[in-house]
Amino acid sequence: MGTLGRSCGARLPSNCREVGRLHQADLPPVEALLPNQVPNYPETVGLPVTLRMTGPTTRPELAFDRSSIHPFALECRNGVCIHRVMEWLENVG
Image 1 (cartoon, helix red, strand yellow):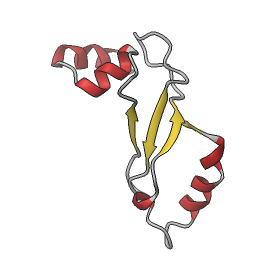
Image 2 (cartoon, one colour; image 1 turned 90 degrees about the vertical axis):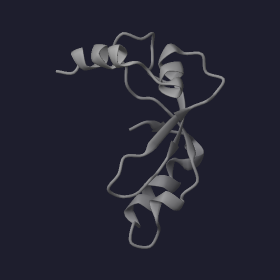
Image 3 (cartoon, helix red, strand yellow; image 1 turned 135 degrees about the vertical axis):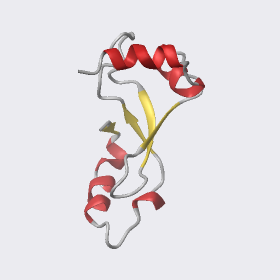
Image 4 (cartoon, one colour; image 1 turned 120 degrees about the vertical axis):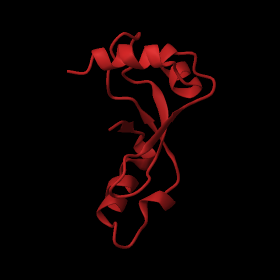
């Protein structure tokens, strides 16, 4: 998962442990940083994203800022053709 900003770092983990009392999907979105290098793209580690928790059994949603011009952010926002998806799948081992 991404790196969270200092302002939410303490809040989010404690909320995740309190799933019985608090619905994760009700948490406000937080700013985070992409922790992974995505193959075949310029540097992706540290790209800013907005992270929104969706629940204890689902993956969080990540969104790139509309102003980002990074190729990976553009493709995530705008969608990709099936040929691009096939390129990505070739890198999955």
